Image (cartoon, protein in one colour):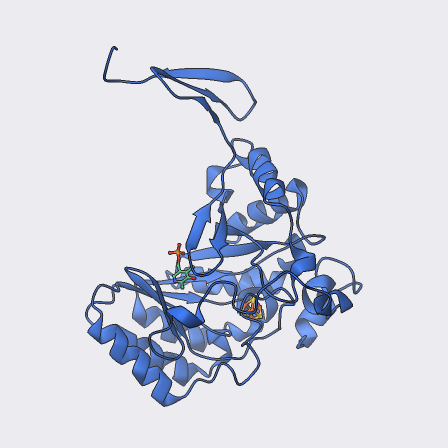
Length: 312
Ligand SMILES: *Cc1c(COP(=O)(O)O)cnc(C)c1O
Ligand code: SF4
């Protein structure tokens, strides 16, 4: 476990929404359902610390350290342990693979949390990736803006802004994580022209209701972070007690669409076990397909739309 002083201060009690994310629970060792490598990452790893699952993008793991170890982490088999071992050699092997695989046009840098590395190391990774002509977009996945926002410094941002197009997807799960400090961190990044997205995990007892998520997504928009994904919890060993039924997420999404800004609404998705990829789960608005498409709007009113083509 790791809980830094900043996040500890935000926790009011062990079983509140922030406490549950950070403090170990006995339920973690009473999980008989979940898997150690739920996304089949290890079998889709052509070189150590690189996962190539989709045709045009790849995931590069650059550190095993995080500012806090989330109890529900998908990669908990590795983060904070030497099963995720990053060296200059593994990084070079990753760059070589990317150079030899020009179909990859986007690289996601993750870990662990890339912003736990020193500024100069971050610069060196970004510049090595930028030197590979086939890589168009660089994306960093980091929870630092929500769990250690003071790590987003002027000097870090001065480095990042040299590597555009650079996107950052951060990770907020609860409105109480949006503080003056996290808002300042996101502002610094956004002011450097870095588009910010958020990957939220749907967690039982933490944020599994429409009011909490609505508040979170609207607050994120205000700090210039676009909700990107809401994830169904992965089948990760030791995290079964955080899982909700998929229907819970779908019902929550129905309470969001149309009721709040479309910009505040992420895609609810399930990451298929065994590396099958992300599957969007959406409420069923379509009632009937045929000459007329019959559907329900966000208020539950029935509408039709005449299809074009045969017979019309
Ligand atoms: C999630 C993920 C991606 C990125 O998927 P997007 O839908 O583009 O966000 C890429 N590679 C791996 C291995 C992933 O798990
Ligand atoms: S910050 Fe991300 S990688 Fe690190 S423990 Fe939390 S969920 Fe896992």
